[in-house]
Length: 376
Image (cartoon, rainbow, N blue to C red):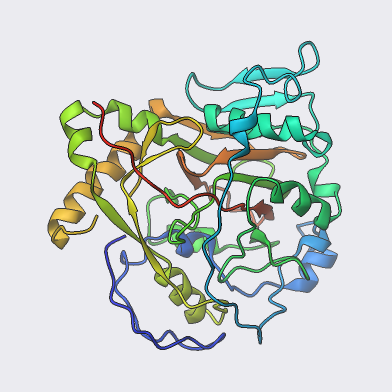
């Protein structure tokens, strides 16, 4: 996102935005997904005339810490467990016991026959490396949603410090869980499409943080019978597709990632802001600590028109290159694990019949983005 000026005055937890900052004319992720939005809790518990009750009421979003103000996140030392992994994956993918289906050559794999919740330390190390290599892995027939929430968090915490989202609802007592929730009979997707031709919003999660997430987990609780898939794009492959001279020019550039729009959107809808919003500068090309490969990100020192021009090229390069994308179809028991450092993604809001879409995300943070010298 383009740089924004920010005052230093702290926000109250629920208040009007301290300023109305320029955004992308409302075409951002928050306008599709929504944060801090009210839903009919009774409909989720009991169902409606057309929709059944929520399958996992313990995962319904609440905002139960409205008087608690969180301090700024502090730096921490992250260790990527993929560095310790056996690259033959004997504990994660034991021979003759699992079914592995690569969706595309470079990104996306479906795995059946292994239970993530039962992985040993060695299996978790291998999971970190395998996800870094395959970028996105959909594990089918998992028991993750049925675990006690604290057990799911214990599993995810192995991969990094839990991120607590600045505005989203969470299961009661578990702010470390980020919920993606559209309740029964919700028609807001159709309302969004009355102003837009599609719901595609490519992004990587919470990159405005100084240390954005790495190995990320999203698991389904409820979903429409069809639709609501998630698209992923391979940013490392997108970088390789560029000419050597263009790649060289991108090295050394930094982009501003802003959390301000997300907070403004939440407050404008009556939601909360758990922390003061921040912006962070990250290199457009970053290096993965396990793979030692570079990936494109989303400029500093450019004039607005120059920045917009280059960013538009990069955004279009990602969006139009379907041959570096994969698509995950959600089914009950699915856990999708991706490396947030090397992919971007977009949910699809393409169903309009009011079926519930309810997912939970565990978001371990990783190292601060860094760049190695250009090597051609």
